Each structure stands twice: as C-alpha cells, then as structure tokens.
Amino acid sequence: MRILKLFVLAAIAMMVFASYNTIPTHAQSGLTIGFSQIGSESGWRTSETVSIKAEAEKRGIKLLFDDAQQKQENQIKALRSFIAQGVDAILLAPVVETGWDDVLKEAKDAGIPVVLVDRGVKVDDDSLYLTKVSSDFVHEGRLAAAWLAQRTNGICQIVELQGTIGSSAAIDRQKGFADVIALFPEMKIIATQSGDFTRDGGKKVMEAFLKAQDPKTICAVWAHNDDMVLGAIQAIKEAGLKPGVDILTISVDAVPDIFKAMADGEANATVELSPNLGGPAFDAINDFKAGKEVPKWIVSTSPMYFPATAADEYAKRSAK
Ligand code: AHR
Image 1 (cartoon, helix red, strand yellow):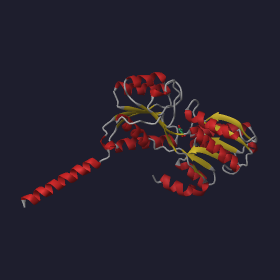
Image 2 (cartoon, helix red, strand yellow):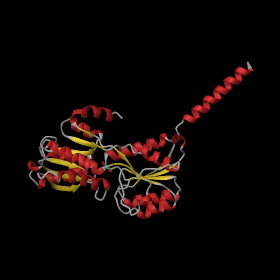
Image 3 (cartoon, rainbow, N blue to C red):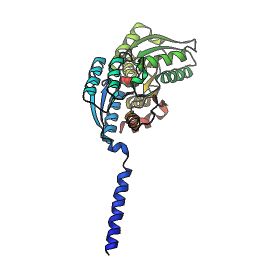
Image 4 (spheres, rainbow, N blue to C red):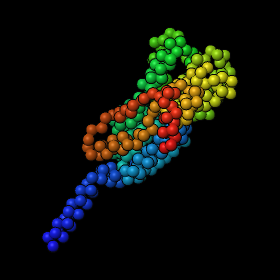
C-alpha cells in the first residue's frame, strides 16, 4: 500500500513537473518593456495598440506604455524615461524616419535593445536598433498601383492622400506606387497632399481636390491608409458622386470599416497591414536575450482584399 502511495505521489510530482515545463517560456518572461506609441490617428493604430498590450499581458510582460500624441519630441522623452527606469527592452513606433540617432545611441549605451514596430528609421548606424517588425511599405504601394493599372487598363488620373509627412509609411508607399505607375504613360498623379493618416484629414483634402479640379477628370483616389479613404468617400458622396464607381478607391490597412465600404460598393480594394506586431517583436527580444541571432527586418505579408469577400471579412473582423 505504501509503495502504491509513493508511486502515485511520484507520478503526480512528475505530471506537475512536466506541465510546468510545457508552459511556454514567454509566459514566465517577467520582463519590463517600454512601448512608445505614436498616438491614435487611425483605426489601424488603435488596433495595433490593443494587440500589443494584449500580447504583453498574455506573456506576463510588464508594458510601460506612452502615447506620444504624434510628436517626435514626446517619443524621445518617453525613450529617455524608459532608459532611466532601466527597462529590459523598448518598442518604438517612430512617427517620422529621421532624428533618432542620439536617443537610440543612449539606449544602446545602456544595453537596452530597441525593436522598431511598424515604421522604420533612417540612422547612420543600424546597430542602434535590434530589429524592425513591419510590412514592406514600398511593396504595399506597388501592389496598390498594380491593381489600379490592371483595373483601369493603365489609363487613370489619380489623386493621392499621403500619410504623415516624413513617416516611413508615407515615404515608402508613395515611392512604391510611383515606381509602378511610371510604367504606364497614361497613369498620372494629378494632385497629392497629406491627410496625416486621419479620417478628417482625408475628407478635408479630398474636398479641396474636388473643388480644385473637375471631379470628372479624377479616375481614382489612392490613399496611404483606409481612414483617409473613408474620409474621402464621405467627401465624394457630399459632392454628389458615387465613390467606388465614379471615383475608384485603393488604400492600405484592411480596417473593419473599409470592408463595410467595399460591401456597400463604395470602395474597391485595400492592402492589408497586420496590426499584430507584438508577438514577433517580443519573440525577437526573447531570442536576443537567449543569445540567438535576430534578423534585421521581420517582414509581415501584405494580402489584398476586394469587394467579393468584403461582407464576410467585415462580419469576421467587426465581431472581434
Ligand atoms: O505606419 C502605419 C500607418 O500608420 C497605417 O497605415 C496608418 O493607418 C497608421 O496611422
């Protein structure tokens, strides 16, 4: 009997030990990580914040969150405060590309790895950050232009709604789009202006475009994000035109509202930018801490979506 009891106790102990060992290592992380977020200019940005916070919680990471309200100086202050607090790592979603060398050097000197999430930076020495977790914005712009070229047989006068001036997302999407339309002599950008990645900005700029030229000459609006195109759709409707028919739309992000607009016949296509960047960013930090090699760019994919699947996608995504 005693032997049987000992056997049962040993078996229970082995099971407890085994289950303890199968807890993923990230769940035991106990790291403190600072996250400097740009702000909440778009639906996509809000989803990214929610997703990164949830991923941190799931992994037992203490996340120090700072909302920079679109200001680089606030991001620099937040980074300095994270460094002073001796965090284990920093996530940075940089509002613009340039002006980061000094503060990144301070983080590096303090031995704190910095992971760029979503947008990139231009620095003299790229060892100042550990890795960048983002999609390829140039590729997104190329995909958008290739779809428009195919949809219009390469004949289209386009108005462009740019994202935040100086941001890698705006610079690279503009470049990728321009690269492709340069191959089609009858595709031209007839007006371009920043709507700052906001719905309100997109609406105001589109209103100005519609006043400045005969709306019949505008074949399509290319927006660096869905929120701006959703604002533009409103402006097109208020001008008495049909968005998605009289003026085609193409944008980036794949937020739930663009699927609603596509299902309603008011938008034509979007390129998806995944907001779920926390998982790969935290994995990279864990790998770095474990002495493993971390690639300099962890690229997410950019699928495109069209009206045919929009109602289903909207149902799936708005239920989350
Ligand atoms: O940097 C990514 C861009 O920033 C998203 O496309 C946009 O919606 C956001 O505000």
